[in-house]
Amino acid sequence: FDSDKIKALVDKLSIYPVGSFVRLSNKEIAKVISSNPDSPLRPRILILFSSNGNYMPERKVLDLSESNSIHIREPLSLAELGYKYLKKGGR
Image 1 (spheres, helix red, strand yellow):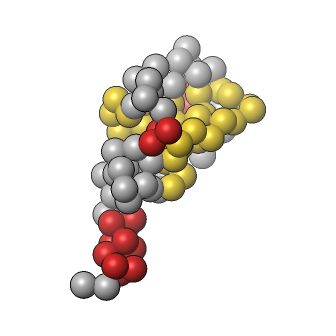
Image 2: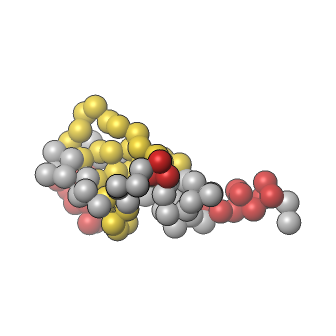
């Protein structure tokens, strides 16, 4: 198979697709901004909410493949995020 096509397929079928929301092991809420084909469980993310639920206006990008201390605890649906988070800007 063509490696470029396989990579594109993996990006689309990632465990944590781009645009999905996740809760991290440190209880922060983040949005997946890019997949990592070499380590599908460790995408690049954008931190949106602190561990106590506060909106983070100074958003931080984190490449989980470069962090040994933080990992994704669980994916979150829009319903699980709830109105509180979405109202504060977690689009």
